[in-house]
Image 1 (cartoon, helix red, strand yellow):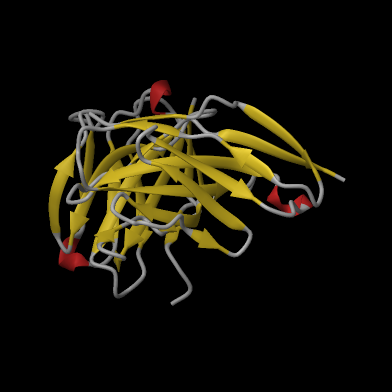
Image 2 (tube, chains in turn blue, red):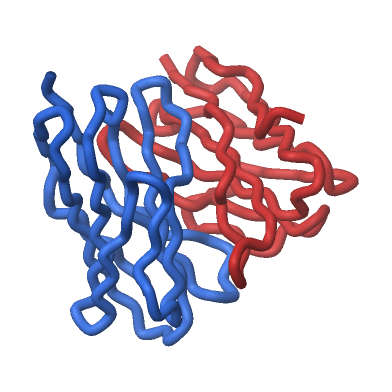
Length: 114
Length: 116
């Protein structure tokens, strides 16, 4: 079974600073994908970034980067130059390569202070 | 086509009543997923379809829950004899093939169910 652990229930960051949101995962499958989503108070899940288990380089999408450490089974999200609009809940998720479902963590609430 | 659409956005029902939710995925996506999310938790997988075939169902999906995707387009999720424990946000997502795997890259805004 897959498991995602997000150990930070809440995080605060000053506007324009960088912040790292932690995610560790557990799986015995060799091929899988890791994802991060943002969920603002409006409720919609917004896909941010994807990392494949065989990808050699860390994924980046604009101000988002994924710090993938396969041996440690961690997939931390780094948000650079935080903006007030980044305040939201952030979820880490994982899916096996040929599976139908994704497994989500319990999320981290990020608050960006002006 | 602007994204995944869910209807209604909010539903309040009395315990014991039946409710049905609808999801319209992005038109070219052949996979459609349903998740349930309770307050303070991450989404939990309920079921998914590839075209009109329901390929996987979670153990969370009790006999009171049924989902359909006739003709492989929109999907409905029905809950019969609702219970207070069914109160949650019901999320729908659709996906296309992305960098070697399907992924729920596109979620709807959800249907918030409150059972009173």
